[in-house]
Length: 101
Image (cartoon, rainbow, N blue to C red):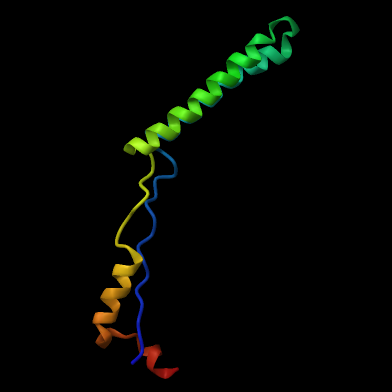
């Protein structure tokens, strides 16, 4: 008896347009401004560390927000094992090419 398998559903498609992604991205951009100013102005090297701290906080905020559910979902559709189990219970719906092999 030949087994048929169904294709799992495609992943959630939001192109990173989530609150967590936007927060992290804007924090990194805002943190890069003092870093650039600290590199340009030699007497203001403290700005490099301030900008680096902002970038680190933005990354941490993005990760925390993603874990809190404001990022891209980790699970979507039906699990692969369930799709395979459904396909195994319906052998009468086998594709036409499966019998020709």
